[in-house]
Length: 333
Image (tube, rainbow, N blue to C red):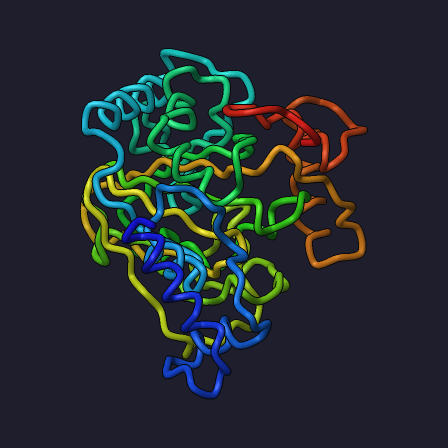
């Protein structure tokens, strides 16, 4: 038996004990005490994650992998982003977003006008991020071997214009997704440069992935809120939080129920990151009418209808159109 396997067996034996004898923080106790004997729920049996890494993700809902994406790849993604900002290429289905604080200012045909690219699946260079072998190896640890790339973004968080609109409210990504199960969805988020508290790094509430999907809506911010930036209603602001400061190429993987957001960019530069949400291809679509997700369904359908001049399109169809198989077999999605 390998040392890793021995370590895993020892840890599982430890966790199988009565919750009363497990010395830990409240979040840890709640996670492991609800369904003894303990079984791994959020990670799959592969040889990549160490036992400690698996336990960390099970408990916290995220894990940071250092130096996963090369400088060369990130620089190529940056150049592809700049070509789009200069309007040198036109990508079908791509959504180019601008911060609400500068959206009505004079248009500048460079990256200063763009705060986010969304749905870049038709751009071969940017979509290459979603197919990087080192990314997919980790994705398989969370959702299994049949992998769909469902949602893509390149975030170019601008310097805050004084209205705090560069913030992203605390939210759960599952709010945007009409497919389940949640445990078979994971996001990879890679820093394209140094990311810290000054330029608005990700902020996560560890352990919140063990809860349920909360009601989301636009926060009532005085300076305004960017389009589609819904936030959780009524989360506990006293919940312990972690600021994910990262170096260029570092990548965080996190569960879609993990409550997270990002702060203001208080520097003069832009903060870039690239991300993809993956789902197992055997996930299935659900009807979100009558649920807390109905507001985002209506908003997405309205945007899609105006963009493509199509009146009769379902929330499910907007996602099926974007999804791309990147590994294994396409089953349901």
